[in-house]
Length: 620
Image (tube, rainbow, N blue to C red):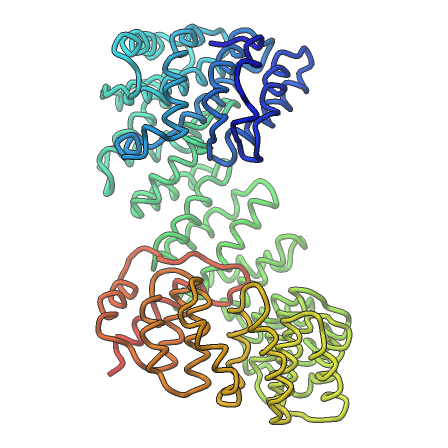
């Protein structure tokens, strides 16, 4: 260990942390010895921000370790937090230690320093405070595989004593985990202590992998509803709590996860843990929506606060469209919540709309909101005559931002019938409320008047490049004049910065954009994959030839956002190279979701990926 008196012996200015030179580290370490608890807390917070920034460690991290170890033993308080800082600094995947880059890495240097000071920290295992003992165990676990033989033997003996004698069950469970890090498998599934049984079951499940034995699932479900009633909640690795680890384990085995979630919900859904696990399963696995929504319905009466209720209702709304026929019990529950408190009524009504329950339409019309109106436009296309006037009134009332965007998107689903909303779209463009999507809507409307062309011409001159491009395209669609749009896109495609958005915007110009080909073609080989994708799609739209576009798009296909966009472009072209067929079969048949949800996306990206893959596989 090193005392604060030695801080000036380290050339901190030559070392770096998350924010540059580490010159502030000595001051922060000295602050750990302050009598004022707030000062100590602020210093620890700052150290987490610079020498361990969001899980990343730096040059200055290892030199700080012996000073932090000294502070654990000699600073006036917060020993548990300082020990946890040491533990997370040294956190690493044991497999990383076998990689060629390990010897010179910052994590390797941290582990070496921590292994050197560990003998001085071992007395913390006998501290009177439960939190200090738990944090000390995590320090031992962090370097269990990097200790010299003599230190390892001493540490293992001390941990074994805790496992056998500590009066706190959670500490014994932690000791069991550390013994496992030392390579000791302990038969503890029959322990009288639920915390110990749970730790043993989690270790066994990690070792075996899914599908888990029935006995393990029983323990995880029985003892995992409240893993540790204590209030320290220290993580084992990085910032993952035991609850997070247990959720991850149960999500890997979908049947075990559903069984555990059902038992937790039946027991009262303490802390909304069962409903949260159900949500994770729906986000991770395909085609388990019926079971998950049944869990959410069962969980709703158990929710103890508005936030937890909203969580359940939101989950139902996200997945209810995947049910072929939502049951009457589920729809009735949504209907009841949709007429209840305002905070829970909004997600309940959205879910009811997506269930296509006829009662939802009347509720939407009585209490219209942008999101529910947008969903109603999609789910009740036959109700255009009732919904369009309400959408118009809501727009006219001054809707802005994402609300206005949702309303204009709802109008886009009505085709020619949406033309009656031209006055509201013009006002949005004039007042710059969701002006980009308003310009696109005006272009689709097919109505040409001097006022419209004048407003579009004004918007073309905007310093907002997205608005300028949208207005130029709309002007072209209405008048057939290409020159204004060509001037706009020539400027956008030669400007500094990302251009893929602009490439995507010019697609409606079609062959009229041919003069821009000298600017588009070099972008086919751009380093940025989004630019290559958008350039290939634009090239095909402009030339009508798939020859240059198809190889570029095919090379980008994958379970990523850009890969999905490339697949959409290939589907529109109608050409799928044979070498893509194995990938398409994987996209179509994977039981796991390959893409996560994206904000403001009307359709879940993974569902798009699977549907496109299935469609293309059945196309001759």
